Length: 179
Length: 435
Image 1 (tube, rainbow over the protein chains, first blue to last red):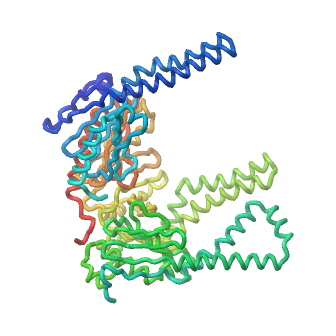
Image 2: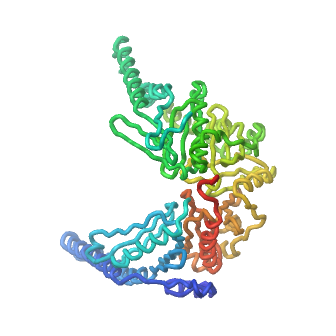
């Protein structure tokens, strides 16, 4: 729980743990992201860094000598390091719909937690790029009057993204307020 | 005056002097070119005969006059029950409908030349409006009447009575004497900093390069900055008057360019109390405010603290500035040595208060009803120390940060502030403040 020591807080930050001593009825129900986003990111990582490894290795090996080809180990190391990192980052993303606001929590090293009251939402956006579409993913982005509000949930299943959008718009309308 | 039926709002044009403000554009272009490249300009001008020169000048002035006239002729505005409509453009048509209940502030400004000509600019601050949405120029009296009408409609008076309502009475809250303003500027570090830079840098450059142009190119902007931060500020903030009326806050100021601002009730998103180091002995503060869509940010350039706080109590009803703020825990010093002492927060029933700065203290007050979102941020080093930042975003696109709080306190603050944002909203005043 959050009241632990600093090391303890560091460990629990990535896990869906409830918050300390709040109102039990309003305890957030955290929802994690579907595995599609992790698959997509890992595939992109392997494709790009794999290609870079091959290209560096081949080009340097052919034109500069086999010793120089060792530079190909750099992208390879980045790939091996990035693989578990992407997993950690993906696990850290989660969101919760409370009675009056939406919570988004993310980040391992740079942890960030955002609370947006439904009434403050000006616009809900569902976007999906070509790669995301291929993997059957969509992102939901919330806009409030403050541009600094960075409330984005990436890598949702389109059906869930649309459900969330409709629900947020509905709740936003019910609780709507001016500036 | 009879109110026209809603279907055909009466369209009006701007004041007939308006075309003249475009007339100087070609002159400015030529002057800019001459300053930018003096040798070239001189050579080119020598080549031309006087007749050609005069003809070119006449053509430019005529062209500008025609452009000014056409843009004036094709600009119309009208006021309906709910909107201000501006229709403009000869080639590229543009129609702006500005909803009156969304008004965040109304500015009537009079640059020096406009004062001489007896005209004024009127601008409605709504989120998203910019320079091209201002009505420039209107007759002085017309601008005043229009402002009263727009505010009366925005306040929610019945359409039939709008013209009878007239200007709301103003009660003066504060006037800044010229002497106090001058002393406050003398006691400002920025004034001396820019002045010192303007006096020291050009001679040094002269010894280093012996090039007149380099020295001039650095000295002129530096002198300009020094002038703007001392004389410029004095001229702009001269005769600063803050008044209170049923239509909200009235701020009038300026020696040469006069500005009259009106901020309707409930539009202030954040108030900053700034306390520069050298002002502290005299107990003076500067009050800034954030209003969504408005570029102006000063409420009081300088005033004794008690007076300033009484004005704040009028602007944000029921708000008192808390006397003591909770500092971050001691271990925050490991994240930010020494300066961590400048931070502090407090939460009252109505506002979220955060302070930062050690020498130049700045306290930000955000009414709970104006909070758009709340964020908690924690970097790796902060995590080790068990600290976190809490950021509160307001509708004026600004963020107020409570830095280096204890991690568990920050987590609690995050949720509690989100809840307060909700309850604060329920008690907030309606957009139409007279309805």
